[in-house]
Image 1 (cartoon, each protein chain N blue to C red):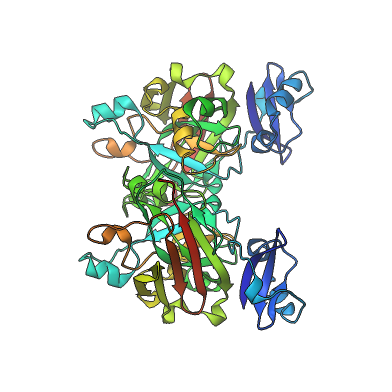
Image 2 (tube, rainbow over the protein chains, first blue to last red):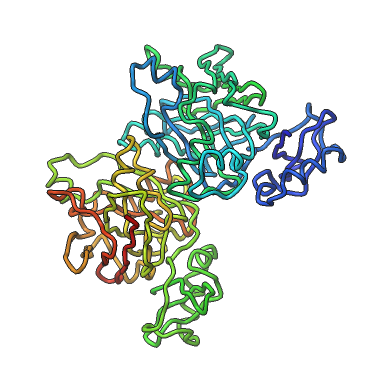
Length: 277
Length: 277
């Protein structure tokens, strides 16, 4: 199944995608749907329901709008780590964003003038579908609601100000998330999905989710050793090579750029960048 | 005023402290009270109300139980930074915890066997009382609901596993917070409050809040440049010298230790430490 949070006449509503268009679900967003243990069943039962909006006319919101936790993993693509001449990590490098950090998948992203080094990071995101604490990777796998796309847009100047990356990673509405949540029966990142990032049509990142050092289940299991994860929580799994700051000379987003982030089998984010400077 | 979140017969309730005892407020916790813009007025009007529990019989919960954001500042005590031979920082070093990280001010804190390097960090905490984004230090000052005490108990082995401290800082129920929120008219950390930490009666930390490099208003103003702060959000302002890992040899908490964290004019936290190992 492919689930989405839509803007229907100014009102937020969860919906399930069908070949006929989106069928509305009785929840204001996918995060609320996931709070109900039988969410899969509810969504399946609605597959034959009335279409509320066609796929060509849809307005997407962030697929989960109010996660309690948004946890990100850095340095997680094997090919990127090895090409940088580094050893594979024993532990995932984790940092955080907030619900406030999220943005709609096709939103214009406005950044004001606080940062002059705004960089892209295409990422696979996994959404938690059940409460877990101290769970094994196997238990974690069955707690996954599905997969979606995000771009962990990073303010490199703020990220480098101190040893801790957080302040460069948690700007409000910096992180588009969506457009749909694809359930694991239709999407297997471990088998390998191509992930790309394009800036103004030029491909800047090209990776494969099969090369993640810590896959989604491993990340959920590891995180659950120190904190409880709950339905709707979001984990960003890291970015492949090709970020702007690693280029010579470094390249950053400029006012008017179009940023497209895509993952095979899920879809794409498309964001116009607006920067006051 | 001194506000608290109490356990009254198994039910959580906000209350205001009086010389007669605690007077109940019509909110389930101080965080909910702070959502109402005229929270000060409501609390003041209740100062003459019926006492629900005497001060000697009170059971405190974390003074704010469900903050959306818990942001921590590291490396913030001037005397500690200078004694370490480091330059004063230009920017605050920020990282995060969760609502799940919080614990009651007199709770037994159980840590299982995940970490063998559990360390103390006595900290002044400031609670936000109004929504702020891009605010000046002056605006930030007027957005402060009050001050309380916390201990940013840190799993040093997990904190050191990667460059990012988060995973050693966000263990569930690792961070006692309370016992009361003291409003700024009765508490001025900038004027200088003695902050101490004792382990089994031995003083291990002794600092003064007047030596913070970034005071509460400066932190709120800085954070508000990248993310919105809202009523009930909590900021931990950093710890003075004397943490266990800086001792020779390093010293960590052990099963059965009693950890007491106190700030002049606010009160103290007292936590029995329980570790399976």
